[in-house]
Amino acid sequence: MGGVIALTLTACTTDSVFYDVDNPNNSSQTANGNNGGMTTNSYTGDAANPDGYGSHWDIFRHVEMYYHYENTTEYSGTPATRLEFVVTPYIGLAYSDNDVNDDTFFDMSSSLPEGDFINMASQYPNMFLPTDNEIGNFVPANPITISGLATPLWGNTALRVFSLDHCHVIGPLAPVYHNPNGIFFDISSPPVPYQTSTTLEQDFLSKYGKVFFYYWEARDPATFAVIHSGYVTPYCDTNRATYWQDTNVPASNLPGIASGTARLYENIRCNDTNNPSHELVLETDTYPSETVFTHPGTGEEYRVSIETFRSGYYPYGPGVGGISMGGTISTLKLELN
Image (cartoon, rainbow, N blue to C red):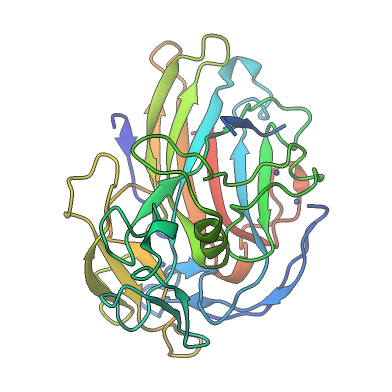
């Protein structure tokens, strides 16, 4: 992908966290937000690796949350350094059950069948039909453009995509403060070779899906020329066998990755309860979690990075513009390095 690629540590303790958010969204969407709730989280940190992989995703805890995006390339006060940030989320089933080969997804928190792939295969054109595997399939949402303009802040420098459940793939919320254009993860009509997503598939992913990775482009705002591009996913050390177990199912249709070479891992232990969250993640180093690149025309250096946080816990204090980050479950950023 070019540039200098560095991996930063991001991996499932449990703290209760109150979501403190000011106010709380196709073809390519342009971003131009109020949520609340209590939740706990899963965490794979320990004394040797205190950060571990912090994550909201736990099959036993479905709560509202938001994805947070930033493009601060002009916000720093240097308009000449501004780049547009265009991100394409790839959505997949966030969890495994106790049998990934029976072609039916069971919610491990209720033991109820929620994805009847084998008897209703045509209703899951992207989540089952491409491989006949109940896990490891992905579908891209429409691209989201974050312009990087310094004002107004929301929709240009920062954006939050909010969901009442797991993954906001069904229609926009009414425009709100943190998401004035009502942007959501629109998978209704993905590009070829993906299929038009059915109502049942969208409902299923809204309850059990997550964004696994992104394709991103940093573009010149005047010419729209792509300055740099790549893929990004949160870092998780799946080699830590105490926490992660190979599902023996390959992750399918991964752009730029040879078929069958990247595997999916399931969380089998979290340090909050010593129980599994059943979250699925991509094998370590499938994609980077951070990429540093240099603009060939200006010599300016930029960084794209992603991080997830346990149960919405954001440890770094206020975000851009002094905004509360208490409800953040992940951040994806383009910034000056």
